[in-house]
Amino acid sequence: MLLLLPTLKAQEAITNPDRMWTVPAVYTMDEPVTWYFDFASAPQLADGEALYLWIWAPTNPTGTPIPITYNGDRIWSISFTPTEFFGMTVEELFANTEAFYFLLRDLDATKLTGTLSLPKVDYIKNFVESGKQINFAPSDFQLGSTLSILFNANLVDGFLPAPATVHMHGGLNNWDAQQQFQAWLPEIREKTAFRHIGNGIYKKDLVPQTYFGVTEEYEMENMVFLAVKYNGNEASPDWAGASPDYQIIAPGVPEPLPPSLSFFPLKISINDILVITRDNNVRGQRLTYTITGGSKTLTGDMEGAMARQRAFVNVAHEFKGMAISSLHILIKDQNGITIYDEDMPLVTVDNPIKN
Image (cartoon, rainbow, N blue to C red; front, side, top):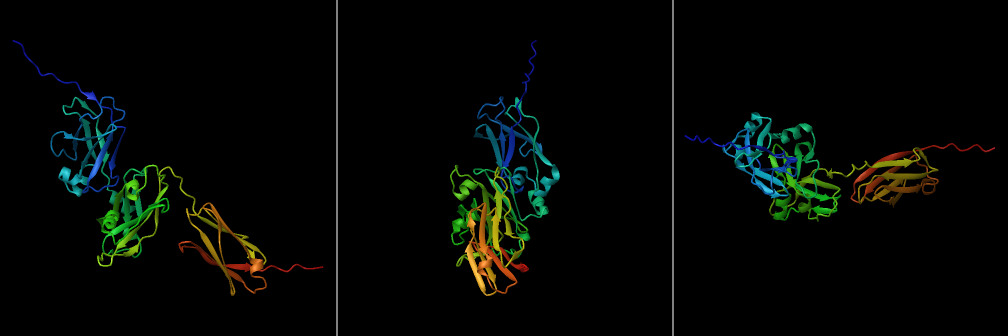
């Protein structure tokens, strides 16, 4: 009698992904997220080969392999909302395990990866505890990738309560390319809206290239924005307040040096020429000065460019013969932002003794 035994298929190890990431990079457990897996270095997989997710922590919601999607360029993905996918609350998900544990395989489990994991991160809790007004992720975001921005309205004096929604008024490269918050346009209100997560915490996901309408050749150096309150009045839509300006430096771009204002000489007399220098100005910033001594006021433009702007003021000539003990110096930019607004005392110079 011939006894037939089942044939056991040998398992082949799939090289683990070169990288794994999520979009958005910052997500709550009750919002949609996509997990991405890059198998560029896995020779065991053919382009477009069917792959399945086998997950056991926190649970397997179906008890069966779950198909994932091939996106091209040897990248696979799966999209879901964690609370719905696992049938658990946010609190239950965080209490279960510190990470999602799973592997990827073919349908028959003849090829499979080792154990993989993605951390469960309470981004909102971490953000609140950081004490920052804004934060963003990922740190290596690119012009054509999704950037997540968090905003804590509780830390901006007078911002809350917000009468309605909160929106982004922003631009790239110091407002070179802009997406303004035009409150009177419903489609712009929708595009620029932050999502209110709760308790004064707001979140926005965007792809800089499409959000600001630039080409893929655009060289992004930074992103600037402010959070704006919408007044909620359909009959007369308008801003109802705004946060300070924020700036996010693009990856690979050196952190700009802080602006530096200096005067020469350090102690000035009525007989001197005053030199005002401001280094490391913001792109496009133009500075003017107003100097008042007694009843006389001088105004002028500082000359130069972004790296350095400078003004020379002949105090000896302009204020000759005036009995003044100080000069008031006011420096502003073209947007009315005050750079310096203080009195500068004039030192007394002894008359030389003549023989």
